[in-house]
Each structure stands twice: as C-alpha cells, then as structure tokens.
Length: 452
Image (cartoon, rainbow, N blue to C red; front, side, top):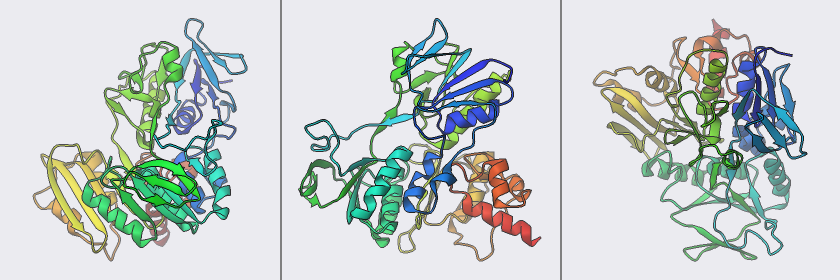
C-alpha cells in the first residue's frame, strides 16, 4: 500500500485516471467508477465508431497500486464521517475526496423520443459512453440512414463516422452554423461544405421537434427519414451528488484556486467543476486540473488560475483546431478565408500576442501557432499575416524541441524526438491519448528522427 493520505476519487474517467497516474506511489488512491469498463479515452469513441480504432486501443492504463473499482456507483457523501456510500450500501473512507463525475447528457425537447412505457424509441441513441458506442455500432449494419442532432464537435465527429460506415447521414443544428460555440459563421460554413463534399447534409437554423414513424420532423416542416437518431446536443455537469452533500453548486461544482469545493477536504476536477464562471468540457483543461491538484496533494504551493482551451476535431477528412475562445475574446483580428480551397484561418491578437485562433481545413501551421500562443510571443508587424497566408508548405516546418506538440498531455517536440517508436512515445509521454489530433505530428517527428 502507498503512503500518504487516502485519496478517493468519484469517477474513473480521463481526469480521474490522470490524477491517479500522478499520485500513484505517494498516496493511497481509490477510483470509484460506475461503468463496467476500465478507464478509456472518451474523445476517441467516434474513432471506434468510424472503425479506425479498436476499443482496446483507447484503453487508459491504471498504475499499479491504484485500487480501481468498477460498477461502484456512489450515492451519498457523508462529510462528517469522511466516507462515501455506494449503491450496495458499503462505505469507503477518505482523507481527501475528489469529485470527477464528468457531465451527463440531457434529452432535447423532441416529442416522441420517449415511448409511453418510459423507454427511448429504439431508433434513438446517446453517444457519451463505450456502451453507447457499442450499441450504436450494433445498429449500423441494419440501417440505411441516420440523423445526428447537434452540430458541435461531438455531433460532427459522429456524423463523419457514420458517413464513413456507409450511412446516408444528416446533421441538424439549431444554431446558424456548425461548431457555433467554437468558430464563426465563415468557418462553420466551410465545415458544412466539407461535410457535404464527404456526403453528409447539414441543416442549420432548424430544430428537431418530433419523432414519428415517418422520421424526424423539423420546425421548418421538413421530415427527415431515418433509421437512427443520435443525440449529441445537450449536456451538463454532473452535480447531483455534490448538491445532496450540501456543497456549493451553480452550473458546476464550485472550486477555488486550490480546486477545493466549499468543503476543504473535497475537491472537484474536469467537466463537473466550475472555477469562476468557467466550466471546461475539454480534455486539456481537465488534465491540467488533475496535474495541478496532484501537485497540491503532494505538498506543493500552487494555484489554479483557469485553463486555456484547445479543441480539435477528430474526424477523417476534416481538420479543425481552436485555441482559446476566438468568438468572445477582444483583440485585433487577422483573418483569411478561402471557401474554394476549404480553409479558414483566424488569429485574435492583443498587443501583438495571439490570445485565440481558429484553423479550418489546413493545420500545417498549428504547431507554430500553438507555440506562439503558449509562450505569449509578441509577433512582428507582418508575422501574423505570414502565419495565415502561407499555404501548405512543400517542406515540413521544423519545430524546435520546446514547441508543444500534444496540447492534451503537454508534450514537446523534443520529448517525442527522444522516443524510438510510436508505441514508446505513447507509453512514456501519453501523447495522442487525448483528442488524438497530434497523431500525424507525432509520427512525422519520429520519421524525422529516423532520417537523421
């Protein structure tokens, strides 16, 4: 058994597993997961659906010495006794409790999703867990067409995966463009055009209102014939357990700069946590919080000041990266769109420093742009424009060793170059195990090293 405090983590997802990796060997760590599966990378579920990843390939390793308990649903927190109660009425004591309960899907207001007996219509699928993914996989061979409700990152990834699997796929998005939380209308239109080129039709500014035997009815009067309806719109932080325990809950479980809740013995990280006004919803901030909390629990005096958001679209034939919040960040905008080529690039600068960015259709400069973004580099008068106007280079850009390649795990180009193989890079740095968007860059760096 490890020394140190007893750390009990409610949840066995990506943030919880990363925290366990950093605390293994110094603390007695218990992960309580309510799923039947060991931890896995949820971001790559669409790749499993697409067929490019085997389910075993998205498994996350749990360090030796960590007590992982599956099908262990926590129903109550007994703060006075410092114990959590499971559904089987057993109790687990803790010195420190970490809530990593993630987010839960919410049903959109579409009539007919739920049958009179209280069960979902057999055509309707959620897409949040490995069980959801496997259920949808089983339904694909018997289907001809599918409608994905929601045009966010997850919706676009699922739609592309279903298209790759041969289904006639349509996306319904209530907003005026795809990825409306991350990109502007120009970028959304280019992405919709790219999806159309790949065989997926997109309906924006339309809402699904009713599911009938004939199909999914939209508020504009159209009915989309469909064998499958996949719900990817709607989700909220999972806060019920914290609320019942009397912790401060707003949109998420409120945490301070120490990632403490209103009870100093209880912490929260990942999608369920709210720091200031921010609820994250992405892998890099969750892993950043896990790393910082691990350092605090090991005795370091570090404070959390909020996370930078890095979002990558993980879908074959579609390239999208978003740094920060380009649609709500004040600054000078440098922008270039080429709808014919299917590219849109946008930088938001403040005092010459990149504070947000959008890249659609060509990610050949993402390494350099991310490096400037992370370092707060003050760009010269013409540098921002040069970053955007350069088309895909005939020769690859050579990244310096300290350039960040994997935003999810915080891995530099130098650390990748030090590895002898892709498998070694994965095992020793955890690069590519987050959103998977850095996979091509990692392979190119390893090829570059092999040629030296």
